[in-house]
Length: 409
Length: 224
Image (cartoon, rainbow over all chains, first blue to last red; front, top):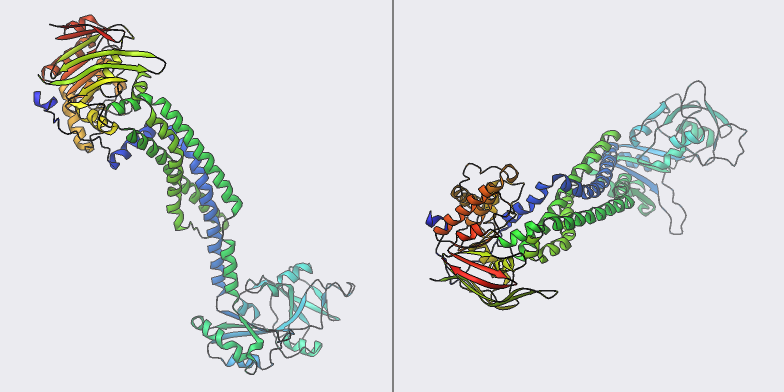
């Protein structure tokens, strides 16, 4: 075999010891593969920390997606027209012609005017003191209110042709609960402006304009006849053509009051809701903090395991030095091993967090969303944490004297 | 005959005042087979680690395969060990979780060769030590003698110039010892330089050259 085991050696130069990255990774895998249970347990801390963070991010993203979907379902083409303030701070009045003007606009699909009946209050009975209005306002509105506002009845029906002639009232969701009426059945009545009104319906919440929840609604003819309500709308809701919302929005003030467009305020409620949804979707700082604490504990756990591992593997370290490893190679091996454990923990945490989010989303019937950045951030966080945790053990391993290490076994 | 390794007036002191080698001079020729005997604590292992560049001497000059150890950086010495030196230890130092083949391939890891190439060299080396049928066995499934032969295969897979064996038969029964020693002699007759530490005079008698150490000094250097 002569040539097979002995070669003529070049004395002029010696090739340096090398450990290519690909081989370093294989080397780093070897430790955890030998001690699987220990590797799994030490990764668990990182997995829990990252899992908690992914779950927090995922759950809030899912809730946000759900909220946005709800807003979308309500329609983002709703615009509201309200009187603005005069130069001196008094409230402007919308002209009584404004509804007709708006109806003439081409891109308006439907509209609804709400008239405030300021002179009337509503009570459960005439025995309730006058001052205890419960903050409930009285409005007059047309029968298409639920449709335009994207809501529906919790109970009963909205004002119809009969309500145009007789004293009938529909309660907003909040008003209903203040008056302790959440269902219509039999003969439920409320005392409204010195007259008994029959409650014919209770509305569900109006997400697009929650201020209407604390109002009750009567028909326009009744309002005019019984309370001499003014013909100036207090608020006009406009459903614009879905593709022309911005255009309608720009023209709405001028159409409502051509003489004084500055006195008209136009807004798009879905914008505000979406902004609020986005703000709500931000992480819960406390939970994220808890995740960070778990990560810190996990990091210390990995550092701890690595220190023990270095002590246990002194023989291996000595052997590797004898086989030609430089101090740097040993350092890199243990650092890579530590990083690897934490990356595995990060991936495990991603799965844990995604699983928790999926369960939550299913339970709440919300869409399942884990932000894309989490897919990259979770393993990266693991890598960084593992690298930090590994610095000290790796230095300890590299500093071991090879002969001492060999003698230890 | 050119020189595989030489120590010139080498002293090695450890912290705490322990002197392991005292002003020791020795030259090992290329292809020579040298047995080192001596009582425990006489400095045999230190001689081997200094020769193997795992430790630098406190004083004196060490040349290994023509390189001046004092002038070489740690990185260069590591390269020397990776390419030119093969170690065999009493305790085998095998990785229990990987196969015999991969244990031997590990011996070539720091040469930077790709795994496939290392495994091929490992297979050749294992066949050379008579373990061609044990490639996929893990160390716990092998006998002591077989384990030491795997360790020897790991040392020779790189085709080293100098093999350094520290009591390779210390953990083996007499039959396995005889096999391992026979194998080492065979490798030696192929041309590799061999330095072997042993307690066993019978084993030492089989070598061309024997040195005896005591208190860090060579007290006897005889050739057959």
